[in-house]
Length: 600
Image 1: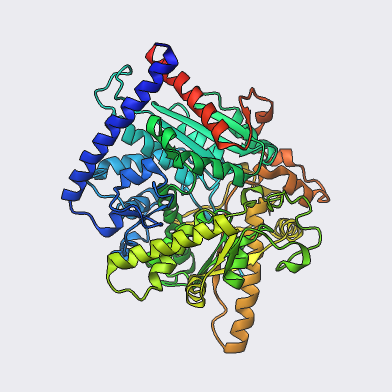
Image 2 (image 1 turned 90 degrees about the vertical axis):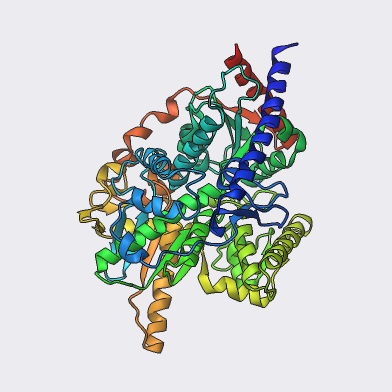
């Protein structure tokens, strides 16, 4: 029998053995009391009663839905007093433990995982805040101080360590040649930042193979180099001839394929994985407490503005507000790929975008490079999507909240059925509409702004032209971004284009709030906390386009040392067609080679 056949059989044996172990573990979990927030179900109604470990390792439910907790956790009655001065890691533990039972991950183990995940960050505060404009109460939450300079490090450093933790526990006492030893095959799609963050979180991990697909030629040179220069044997990059949505579709098709799942344990790193959402909840609370300390107010009025593509980051904000964080609004800041913005304006969620002047805030030049699929190429490629995969989670909660059914399980089932109907219509007809009640429920927590490339460039110019931001006080010390991060140059702040979209939306909201207060006599002092999702060095083209006429500005002076010479390093990447079956063959062949090498 050849080596590939042996490796394939080993994978199948491992899968069967792991299924037995899962059933035993789930039986034990049912015997151990858990809160509803520590039990999980599928958004499409076909899967219930999953543990945290289940949803982390599965990623996607067998019915195609996304995992959510049965209930959103409630905050402890003394949360404000007890949490307000906690450092980031301790705050993360308090929040994570609401959704993870100690029977699954003991207290000290969870604390160790959190520390291991965030010890890789350059900023002491992990996610520090700076104030861009004192008079306008405009603040920036910097989320790019992790190893790959993007907000996704916050979640993917944690997720990578979770994968390792669960595998070590499952493989305890098993030799490398043991056919029941479990091996995880991680597959993901990226428009740029997810890929590098996932790779840095998983490189070198035992019993893990990671495959990251990116749309060929549609990520920034730095983003591509961050991924393809990682040469660890367990890391595989695939450049797909297509769009980011094509890459996402391939991931979903692989998870839905019975043959693939019978021989390989697939795991997800995209924001469809619940652990990604959970990890991001922390910085919403952390930013709020930073604001409380800065203002000296016990309950300041504030809004979060979130550059939004796949809806994962702002979904974490939704969980935070439903838990009890007193945010006035969550504002979706999107680019010309505006499926979310159009939903909040019309109640229709449709793939086909509106181009040019007909689009809200649109310009004639917007979307001139639109792909055949309808995705427009913009200066903010991480948001160039046709469908926001995490929006499904919000749809479930909206359906559940607006249901007239009183019995909890029936209400959950009805919500799942509605979501399935909507998503089937999206796949078949390209879109669907919701009733006025559901749209009104969506508007309770959210508002939306659409920002063009031209407006994005102007905002980068305007913020650079302003004075250096003042630092926010956090835990008694200053947390302004040091100049070595590349966000400051000659006392001027540099935004990446995605963060600039957030600031543009923030300024619009500030104007609207001021005008409303003048008419009604209300309080105009609403703080706006805009999320800075990436370091500007990752998008040099947009930044240089915005600042090309600024005297004395050169990008090289503010380039982080980690990026110097990165594009010249050796790379490894395979080209792949936009075919899930072809990608399936590539994944299977490379994983079996890895496993065979370990058995030798």
